[in-house]
Amino acid sequence: MSTKRTDYITWDEYFMGVAILSGMRSKDPSTQVGACIVSNDNKILSMGYNGLPRGCSDDDFPWTKEGDPLENKYFYTTHSELNAILNYRGGSLEGSKLYVSLFPCNECAKAIIQSGIKTVVYDSDKYADTPSVIASKRMFDSSGVRYYQYQRTGREIQFSV
Ligand SMILES: Nc1nc(=O)n([C@H]2C[C@H](O)[C@@H](COP(=O)(O)O)O2)cc1CO
Ligand SMILES: [Zn+2]
Image 1 (cartoon, protein in one colour):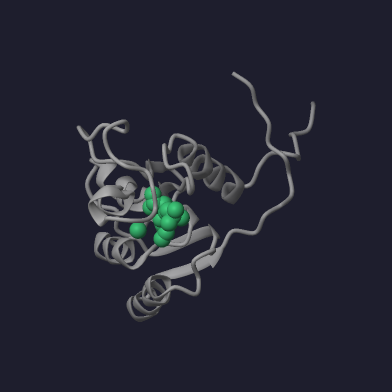
Image 2 (cartoon, helix red, strand yellow):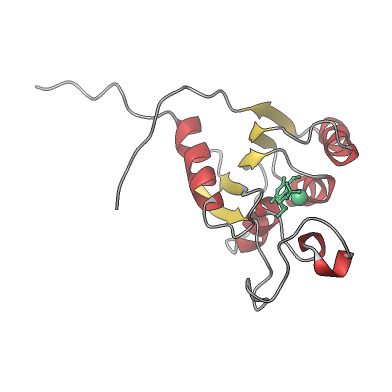
């Protein structure tokens, strides 16, 4: 009898991989973020990436970072984490885990806490020094949401379609 493969990807590689793949759908030219919500028995419940709300054309709204607030992206983009939460139509997210390629902002942190997500696994923390991320961590700490950084394995995952 043959023995099983041993070089299969781990759960964390799988779900962070799905989150990053989802982020590849983003139209944001500077930061693409992806999120994947998983049940505590390792089933994928939802996914999201940063983009405009439904009905708002990617071609009609601005993608710049600076200038008039009405003419840059920040008022208009929905973050990947919030999209993943809102995309879930199956009921409760109580006790679930969120994999996200960038640490959540304070607004998403509130939605994460209120939806019952209990664990956040993140990859980049490039905005760690901003008040928004500091506030997120303060709220997660107070509300018992556990967070840890994804440990990159160095494995290259390639596929073609
Ligand atoms: N956790 C996050 N999830 C997200 O989906 N985003 C989105 C909002 C913007 O579309 C983009 C950040 O743009 P920039 O400031 O790095 O050019 O990423 C941003 C953060 C950061 O808190
Ligand atoms: Zn956010």
